[in-house]
Amino acid sequence: MRGPMLSVEEAQQRVLRVFEPLPTERVDILAAVGRVLASDVHADEDLPPHANSAMDGYAVRANETAQAAPESPTRLRIVGDLPAGAVPRQAVTPGTAIRIMTGAPLPPGADAVVRVEDTDQQDGYVRVYVRVDPGNYVRPAGEDVRAGTLALERGTALRPQEIGMLAALGHSRVAVARKPRVAILATGDELISLDEPLTIGKIRNSNSYSNAAQVIQHGGEPLLLGIARDTTEALTGKLKAGLKEDVDLVLTSGGVSVGDFDLVKEVLATEGEIDFWRVRMKPGKPLAFGHLRTCPSQGSGARPVPVLGLPGNPVSVMVSFEIFVRPVLLKMQGARHWERPTVAATLMDDIPHKDDRRHFVRVWLTWQDGEYRAYLTGAQGSGILSSMVKANALAIIPEDWDCAPAGARVRVMRLD
Ligand code: AMP
Ligand code: MG
Image (cartoon, rainbow, N blue to C red; front, side, top):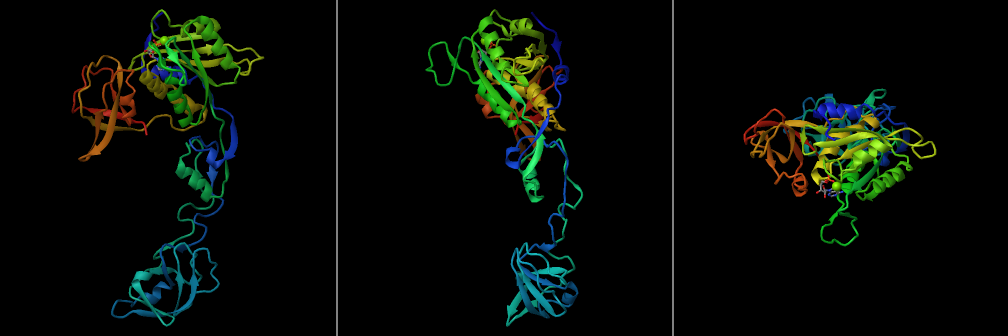
Protein backbone atom coordinates (compact mmCIF):
# COMPACT_ATOMS: atom_id res chain seq x y z
CA MET A 1 0.00 0.00 0.00
CA ARG A 2 1.47 3.33 -1.06
CA GLY A 3 -0.42 6.37 0.11
CA PRO A 4 -0.35 9.74 -1.59
CA MET A 5 2.64 12.04 -1.05
CA LEU A 6 1.48 15.00 1.04
CA SER A 7 3.23 18.28 1.76
CA VAL A 8 4.31 18.79 5.37
CA GLU A 9 1.61 21.44 5.85
CA GLU A 10 -1.15 19.29 4.37
CA ALA A 11 -0.23 16.36 6.59
CA GLN A 12 -0.01 18.63 9.66
CA GLN A 13 -3.48 20.01 8.97
CA ARG A 14 -5.00 16.57 8.46
CA VAL A 15 -3.60 15.47 11.80
CA LEU A 16 -4.35 18.64 13.74
CA ARG A 17 -7.99 18.94 12.73
CA VAL A 18 -9.12 15.87 14.69
CA PHE A 19 -7.87 17.17 18.05
CA GLU A 20 -9.90 19.39 20.37
CA PRO A 21 -8.86 21.35 23.45
CA LEU A 22 -8.86 19.28 26.65
CA PRO A 23 -10.70 20.19 29.85
CA THR A 24 -8.83 22.26 32.40
CA GLU A 25 -7.79 21.73 36.02
CA ARG A 26 -6.22 23.78 38.81
CA VAL A 27 -2.75 22.74 39.94
CA ASP A 28 0.10 24.04 42.09
CA ILE A 29 2.19 26.47 40.11
CA LEU A 30 5.22 24.16 40.25
CA ALA A 31 3.15 21.39 38.70
CA ALA A 32 2.31 23.77 35.85
CA VAL A 33 5.82 24.17 34.40
CA GLY A 34 5.75 23.32 30.68
CA ARG A 35 1.95 23.31 30.61
CA VAL A 36 -0.43 25.85 29.11
CA LEU A 37 -2.30 28.54 31.02
CA ALA A 38 -6.05 28.00 30.67
CA SER A 39 -7.36 31.39 31.77
CA ASP A 40 -6.17 34.98 31.71
CA VAL A 41 -4.41 36.15 34.86
CA HIS A 42 -5.09 39.74 35.86
CA ALA A 43 -3.13 41.49 38.58
CA ASP A 44 -5.22 42.12 41.72
CA GLU A 45 -2.60 44.50 43.00
CA ASP A 46 0.28 46.63 41.79
CA LEU A 47 3.63 44.95 41.28
CA PRO A 48 5.70 46.09 43.07
CA PRO A 49 2.96 46.80 45.62
CA HIS A 50 4.59 50.00 46.93
CA ALA A 51 7.18 52.51 45.72
CA ASN A 52 10.58 51.34 46.95
CA SER A 53 14.26 52.07 46.74
CA ALA A 54 16.37 50.64 43.92
CA MET A 55 19.61 51.31 45.85
CA ASP A 56 21.12 51.44 49.31
CA GLY A 57 21.28 55.13 50.20
CA TYR A 58 19.16 57.96 51.56
CA ALA A 59 15.54 58.84 50.92
CA VAL A 60 15.40 62.60 50.33
CA ARG A 61 13.30 65.41 48.94
CA ALA A 62 14.85 65.92 45.50
CA ASN A 63 14.41 69.72 45.48
CA GLU A 64 16.67 69.99 48.52
CA THR A 65 19.60 68.62 46.50
CA ALA A 66 19.31 71.34 43.83
CA GLN A 67 22.61 72.98 44.88
CA ALA A 68 24.41 69.77 45.90
CA ALA A 69 27.86 69.28 44.38
CA PRO A 70 31.17 67.76 45.51
CA GLU A 71 32.44 71.17 46.70
CA SER A 72 29.08 72.25 48.19
CA PRO A 73 27.25 69.21 49.63
CA THR A 74 23.72 69.46 50.98
CA ARG A 75 23.62 68.57 54.68
CA LEU A 76 20.56 66.68 55.93
CA ARG A 77 19.75 65.31 59.38
CA ILE A 78 19.25 61.52 59.43
CA VAL A 79 15.95 60.88 61.15
CA GLY A 80 15.48 57.14 60.53
CA ASP A 81 16.60 53.86 59.11
CA LEU A 82 14.59 51.69 56.71
CA PRO A 83 15.86 48.18 56.08
CA ALA A 84 14.03 46.04 53.48
CA GLY A 85 10.68 44.94 54.88
CA ALA A 86 10.49 47.81 57.37
CA VAL A 87 7.34 49.91 57.64
CA PRO A 88 8.02 53.66 57.31
CA ARG A 89 6.89 55.33 60.57
CA GLN A 90 8.28 58.74 59.86
CA ALA A 91 8.18 61.24 57.03
CA VAL A 92 11.12 62.94 55.39
CA THR A 93 10.56 66.57 56.29
CA PRO A 94 12.57 69.56 54.99
CA GLY A 95 16.20 69.34 56.09
CA THR A 96 16.08 65.60 56.83
CA ALA A 97 16.81 62.25 55.19
CA ILE A 98 16.12 58.60 56.04
CA ARG A 99 18.67 55.84 55.47
CA ILE A 100 17.09 53.30 53.15
CA MET A 101 18.04 49.85 51.85
CA THR A 102 17.24 48.37 48.45
CA GLY A 103 13.63 47.20 48.35
CA ALA A 104 12.49 49.19 51.39
CA PRO A 105 9.33 51.23 50.87
CA LEU A 106 9.88 54.91 50.16
CA PRO A 107 8.85 56.93 53.27
CA PRO A 108 6.24 59.71 52.97
CA GLY A 109 7.70 63.09 52.06
CA ALA A 110 10.60 61.56 50.09
CA ASP A 111 10.55 61.50 46.32
CA ALA A 112 14.08 60.34 45.49
CA VAL A 113 16.96 58.20 46.68
CA VAL A 114 20.61 59.23 46.72
CA ARG A 115 23.06 56.33 46.45
CA VAL A 116 25.25 55.79 49.48
CA GLU A 117 28.28 56.21 47.16
CA ASP A 118 27.26 59.84 46.55
CA THR A 119 27.13 60.70 50.25
CA ASP A 120 29.15 60.91 53.44
CA GLN A 121 27.80 60.38 56.90
CA GLN A 122 28.95 62.03 60.14
CA ASP A 123 27.43 62.80 63.55
CA GLY A 124 23.88 61.97 62.55
CA TYR A 125 24.04 64.02 59.36
CA VAL A 126 24.47 63.00 55.74
CA ARG A 127 26.30 65.13 53.18
CA VAL A 128 24.81 64.70 49.71
CA TYR A 129 27.29 65.41 46.89
CA VAL A 130 25.01 65.15 43.90
CA ARG A 131 21.83 66.73 42.63
CA VAL A 132 19.04 64.24 42.06
CA ASP A 133 15.73 64.55 40.25
CA PRO A 134 12.41 63.35 41.66
CA GLY A 135 12.09 59.61 41.10
CA ASN A 136 15.85 59.01 41.22
CA TYR A 137 16.43 55.33 42.12
CA VAL A 138 12.77 54.93 43.05
CA ARG A 139 10.84 51.94 41.71
CA PRO A 140 7.26 53.22 41.55
CA ALA A 141 4.35 51.05 42.66
CA GLY A 142 2.98 49.17 39.64
CA GLU A 143 6.14 49.81 37.63
CA ASP A 144 6.20 46.14 36.60
CA VAL A 145 2.46 45.33 36.45
CA ARG A 146 -0.45 47.68 37.18
CA ALA A 147 -3.35 46.46 39.30
CA GLY A 148 -6.24 45.39 37.07
CA THR A 149 -4.17 44.77 33.95
CA LEU A 150 -3.62 41.49 32.11
CA ALA A 151 -0.41 39.94 33.44
CA LEU A 152 -0.49 36.58 31.62
CA GLU A 153 -2.65 35.59 28.69
CA ARG A 154 -4.42 32.25 28.43
CA GLY A 155 -2.73 29.95 25.97
CA THR A 156 0.73 30.89 27.25
CA ALA A 157 3.11 27.99 27.77
CA LEU A 158 4.39 28.35 31.32
CA ARG A 159 8.14 28.83 31.62
CA PRO A 160 10.05 29.69 34.81
CA GLN A 161 9.48 33.41 34.26
CA GLU A 162 5.68 32.95 34.06
CA ILE A 163 5.80 30.85 37.24
CA GLY A 164 7.71 33.72 38.90
CA MET A 165 5.06 36.18 37.77
CA LEU A 166 2.25 34.00 39.16
CA ALA A 167 4.10 33.80 42.49
CA ALA A 168 4.73 37.56 42.57
CA LEU A 169 1.00 38.16 42.04
CA GLY A 170 0.06 35.79 44.84
CA HIS A 171 -1.17 32.79 42.84
CA SER A 172 -0.11 29.48 44.37
CA ARG A 173 -2.42 27.53 42.05
CA VAL A 174 -3.28 28.09 38.43
CA ALA A 175 -5.70 26.78 35.78
CA VAL A 176 -4.07 24.71 33.05
CA ALA A 177 -5.28 22.24 30.46
CA ARG A 178 -5.31 18.65 31.66
CA LYS A 179 -2.18 16.80 30.57
CA PRO A 180 -2.62 15.04 27.23
CA ARG A 181 -2.17 11.32 27.88
CA VAL A 182 -0.05 9.71 25.19
CA ALA A 183 0.40 5.95 24.87
CA ILE A 184 3.69 4.95 23.24
CA LEU A 185 4.24 1.59 21.59
CA ALA A 186 7.42 0.35 19.93
CA THR A 187 7.22 -2.31 17.23
CA GLY A 188 9.84 -4.72 15.99
CA ASP A 189 11.16 -8.25 16.45
CA GLU A 190 14.67 -6.80 16.78
CA LEU A 191 13.87 -4.69 19.83
CA ILE A 192 14.78 -5.45 23.42
CA SER A 193 13.93 -3.48 26.53
CA LEU A 194 16.61 -1.54 28.35
CA ASP A 195 17.33 -4.10 31.05
CA GLU A 196 17.65 -7.09 28.70
CA PRO A 197 21.16 -8.24 27.67
CA LEU A 198 22.15 -7.22 24.16
CA THR A 199 22.47 -10.22 21.84
CA ILE A 200 23.28 -10.45 18.17
CA GLY A 201 20.63 -8.99 15.88
CA LYS A 202 18.94 -7.07 18.68
CA ILE A 203 18.86 -3.34 19.41
CA ARG A 204 17.49 -1.46 22.38
CA ASN A 205 14.15 0.25 22.18
CA SER A 206 15.23 3.88 22.32
CA ASN A 207 12.29 5.41 20.44
CA SER A 208 9.81 4.93 23.25
CA TYR A 209 12.07 6.92 25.55
CA SER A 210 12.94 9.79 23.21
CA ASN A 211 9.22 10.14 22.38
CA ALA A 212 8.20 9.91 26.04
CA ALA A 213 10.72 12.62 26.88
CA GLN A 214 9.28 14.79 24.11
CA VAL A 215 5.78 14.23 25.51
CA ILE A 216 6.92 15.27 29.00
CA GLN A 217 8.71 18.30 27.64
CA HIS A 218 5.49 19.52 26.05
CA GLY A 219 3.22 19.15 29.04
CA GLY A 220 1.94 15.64 28.33
CA GLU A 221 1.92 12.41 30.26
CA PRO A 222 3.50 9.43 28.49
CA LEU A 223 2.33 5.90 29.02
CA LEU A 224 4.81 3.30 27.83
CA LEU A 225 3.11 0.25 26.34
CA GLY A 226 6.37 -1.62 25.74
CA ILE A 227 7.33 -3.48 22.60
CA ALA A 228 4.99 -5.26 20.19
CA ARG A 229 6.43 -8.09 18.16
CA ASP A 230 5.88 -8.02 14.40
CA THR A 231 2.69 -10.08 14.35
CA THR A 232 -0.89 -8.95 13.90
CA GLU A 233 -1.86 -10.60 17.20
CA ALA A 234 0.96 -9.01 19.24
CA LEU A 235 0.35 -5.56 17.86
CA THR A 236 -3.43 -5.78 18.21
CA GLY A 237 -3.09 -7.03 21.79
CA LYS A 238 -0.72 -4.25 22.87
CA LEU A 239 -2.81 -1.55 21.22
CA LYS A 240 -6.01 -2.80 22.83
CA ALA A 241 -4.31 -2.88 26.21
CA GLY A 242 -3.29 0.74 25.69
CA LEU A 243 -6.85 1.79 24.95
CA LYS A 244 -7.93 0.60 28.39
CA GLU A 245 -5.77 3.33 29.87
CA ASP A 246 -7.93 6.22 28.73
CA VAL A 247 -5.49 7.96 26.43
CA ASP A 248 -5.87 10.93 24.11
CA LEU A 249 -3.41 9.70 21.51
CA VAL A 250 -1.45 6.57 20.65
CA LEU A 251 2.02 6.80 19.11
CA THR A 252 3.66 3.80 17.51
CA SER A 253 7.13 3.68 16.03
CA GLY A 254 8.34 1.43 13.24
CA GLY A 255 6.37 -0.89 11.03
CA VAL A 256 5.10 1.80 8.69
CA SER A 257 7.54 1.55 5.81
CA VAL A 258 6.76 -0.53 2.75
CA GLY A 259 7.92 -3.99 3.75
CA ASP A 260 6.70 -7.45 4.64
CA PHE A 261 6.61 -6.85 8.36
CA ASP A 262 4.94 -3.47 8.31
CA LEU A 263 1.88 -4.24 10.26
CA VAL A 264 0.82 -1.00 11.89
CA LYS A 265 -1.33 -0.01 8.96
CA GLU A 266 -2.88 -3.45 8.64
CA VAL A 267 -3.85 -3.57 12.29
CA LEU A 268 -5.20 -0.04 12.16
CA ALA A 269 -7.28 -0.92 9.11
CA THR A 270 -8.78 -3.91 10.94
CA GLU A 271 -9.28 -2.31 14.34
CA GLY A 272 -10.28 1.14 13.20
CA GLU A 273 -9.60 3.40 10.31
CA ILE A 274 -6.37 4.12 8.55
CA ASP A 275 -4.84 6.81 6.39
CA PHE A 276 -1.38 6.00 5.20
CA TRP A 277 0.68 8.70 3.64
CA ARG A 278 4.07 9.55 2.50
CA VAL A 279 5.03 13.06 3.56
CA ARG A 280 7.36 15.09 1.40
CA MET A 281 10.00 15.36 4.12
CA LYS A 282 13.33 13.83 5.12
CA PRO A 283 13.71 12.21 7.55
CA GLY A 284 10.22 10.95 8.27
CA LYS A 285 8.62 10.10 4.95
CA PRO A 286 6.23 7.28 5.96
CA LEU A 287 3.43 8.24 8.33
CA ALA A 288 0.32 6.32 9.28
CA PHE A 289 -2.59 8.19 10.76
CA GLY A 290 -5.88 6.80 11.86
CA HIS A 291 -8.19 5.84 14.68
CA LEU A 292 -8.76 2.81 16.84
CA ARG A 293 -12.33 1.87 17.69
CA THR A 294 -13.06 1.45 21.38
CA CYS A 295 -15.95 -0.11 23.26
CA PRO A 296 -17.94 1.70 25.97
CA SER A 297 -16.52 -0.72 28.56
CA GLN A 298 -13.03 0.44 27.78
CA GLY A 299 -11.31 3.33 29.51
CA SER A 300 -11.34 5.60 26.52
CA GLY A 301 -15.14 5.58 26.60
CA ALA A 302 -16.31 4.53 23.13
CA ARG A 303 -14.74 7.44 21.33
CA PRO A 304 -12.24 6.51 18.64
CA VAL A 305 -8.66 7.13 19.73
CA PRO A 306 -6.32 8.82 17.24
CA VAL A 307 -3.17 6.90 16.36
CA LEU A 308 -0.05 8.29 14.77
CA GLY A 309 2.20 5.62 13.30
CA LEU A 310 5.65 7.21 13.27
CA PRO A 311 8.62 5.80 11.37
CA GLY A 312 11.07 3.52 13.17
CA ASN A 313 14.43 5.16 12.71
CA PRO A 314 15.53 6.93 15.88
CA VAL A 315 15.93 10.37 14.28
CA SER A 316 12.91 10.07 11.98
CA VAL A 317 10.70 9.30 14.95
CA MET A 318 11.91 12.39 16.80
CA VAL A 319 11.62 14.70 13.81
CA SER A 320 8.15 13.34 13.01
CA PHE A 321 7.19 14.04 16.62
CA GLU A 322 8.42 17.63 16.24
CA ILE A 323 6.42 18.18 13.07
CA PHE A 324 3.21 16.29 13.87
CA VAL A 325 2.89 15.49 17.57
CA ARG A 326 4.22 18.64 19.19
CA PRO A 327 1.56 20.84 17.49
CA VAL A 328 -1.13 18.34 18.51
CA LEU A 329 -0.06 18.41 22.18
CA LEU A 330 -0.03 22.20 22.15
CA LYS A 331 -3.41 22.43 20.41
CA MET A 332 -4.97 20.03 22.93
CA GLN A 333 -3.66 22.25 25.70
CA GLY A 334 -5.09 25.41 24.13
CA ALA A 335 -1.72 26.97 23.34
CA ARG A 336 -1.67 30.12 21.22
CA HIS A 337 1.52 29.20 19.38
CA TRP A 338 2.35 25.83 17.87
CA GLU A 339 5.36 26.77 15.79
CA ARG A 340 8.94 26.57 16.92
CA PRO A 341 10.76 29.88 16.51
CA THR A 342 12.84 30.05 13.33
CA VAL A 343 15.70 32.32 12.34
CA ALA A 344 17.42 32.99 9.03
CA ALA A 345 20.93 31.59 9.02
CA THR A 346 23.83 30.91 6.70
CA LEU A 347 24.40 27.24 5.99
CA MET A 348 28.07 26.50 6.73
CA ASP A 349 28.31 23.03 5.12
CA ASP A 350 27.01 21.45 1.93
CA ILE A 351 23.94 19.28 2.41
CA PRO A 352 24.54 16.02 0.53
CA HIS A 353 21.88 14.01 -1.35
CA LYS A 354 19.24 16.72 -1.61
CA ASP A 355 16.08 15.31 -3.17
CA ASP A 356 12.63 16.83 -3.76
CA ARG A 357 11.51 16.46 -0.16
CA ARG A 358 11.81 19.10 2.57
CA HIS A 359 14.94 18.22 4.50
CA PHE A 360 15.20 18.82 8.23
CA VAL A 361 18.94 18.87 8.79
CA ARG A 362 20.56 18.51 12.21
CA VAL A 363 22.66 21.61 12.86
CA TRP A 364 24.37 23.62 15.55
CA LEU A 365 23.00 27.16 15.32
CA THR A 366 25.27 29.88 16.58
CA TRP A 367 25.70 33.65 16.29
CA GLN A 368 29.02 34.60 14.68
CA ASP A 369 30.30 37.81 13.10
CA GLY A 370 26.90 39.46 13.06
CA GLU A 371 24.85 36.59 11.63
CA TYR A 372 23.35 33.24 12.54
CA ARG A 373 25.30 30.30 11.19
CA ALA A 374 24.23 26.67 10.98
CA TYR A 375 26.88 23.92 11.05
CA LEU A 376 26.02 20.31 10.29
CA THR A 377 26.45 18.22 13.43
CA GLY A 378 27.52 15.06 11.61
CA ALA A 379 26.18 12.30 9.41
CA GLN A 380 22.50 12.82 8.58
CA GLY A 381 21.36 9.20 8.26
CA SER A 382 17.93 8.81 9.89
CA GLY A 383 19.35 6.34 12.40
CA ILE A 384 22.27 8.53 13.54
CA LEU A 385 21.22 9.73 16.97
CA SER A 386 24.58 11.31 17.85
CA SER A 387 24.13 14.10 15.30
CA MET A 388 20.73 14.76 16.91
CA VAL A 389 22.41 14.87 20.32
CA LYS A 390 24.88 17.49 19.05
CA ALA A 391 22.17 19.56 17.35
CA ASN A 392 20.33 22.52 18.85
CA ALA A 393 18.27 23.22 15.73
CA LEU A 394 16.98 21.81 12.44
CA ALA A 395 17.80 23.64 9.23
CA ILE A 396 14.84 23.55 6.83
CA ILE A 397 15.86 22.97 3.21
CA PRO A 398 12.89 23.63 0.91
CA GLU A 399 11.57 20.83 -1.30
CA ASP A 400 12.19 22.76 -4.53
CA TRP A 401 15.94 23.22 -4.00
CA ASP A 402 18.08 20.94 -6.17
CA CYS A 403 21.07 21.39 -3.92
CA ALA A 404 21.87 23.11 -0.65
CA PRO A 405 25.45 24.39 -0.83
CA ALA A 406 27.43 25.99 1.97
CA GLY A 407 26.75 29.73 1.97
CA ALA A 408 23.02 29.41 1.22
CA ARG A 409 20.62 31.31 3.46
CA VAL A 410 18.12 28.97 5.12
CA ARG A 411 15.43 29.01 7.76
CA VAL A 412 16.43 27.22 10.95
CA MET A 413 14.04 25.90 13.58
CA ARG A 414 15.40 26.14 17.10
CA LEU A 415 14.88 23.13 19.31
CA ASP A 416 15.87 24.68 22.65
P1 AMP B 1 10.92 -0.10 10.62
O1 AMP B 1 10.18 1.09 10.09
O2 AMP B 1 10.13 -0.89 11.59
O3 AMP B 1 11.47 -0.93 9.51
O4 AMP B 1 12.17 0.48 11.42
C1 AMP B 1 13.15 1.25 10.79
C2 AMP B 1 14.45 1.21 11.54
O5 AMP B 1 14.27 1.76 12.84
C3 AMP B 1 15.00 -0.19 11.78
O6 AMP B 1 16.40 -0.14 11.63
C4 AMP B 1 14.61 -0.49 13.20
O7 AMP B 1 15.48 -1.41 13.81
C5 AMP B 1 14.71 0.87 13.86
N1 AMP B 1 13.79 0.95 14.98
C6 AMP B 1 12.48 0.62 14.95
N2 AMP B 1 11.90 0.78 16.16
C7 AMP B 1 12.90 1.20 16.99
C8 AMP B 1 12.93 1.55 18.37
N3 AMP B 1 11.83 1.49 19.13
N4 AMP B 1 14.09 1.96 18.90
C9 AMP B 1 15.20 2.03 18.12
N5 AMP B 1 15.23 1.73 16.82
C10 AMP B 1 14.09 1.31 16.24
MG1 MG C 1 10.09 -2.78 12.24
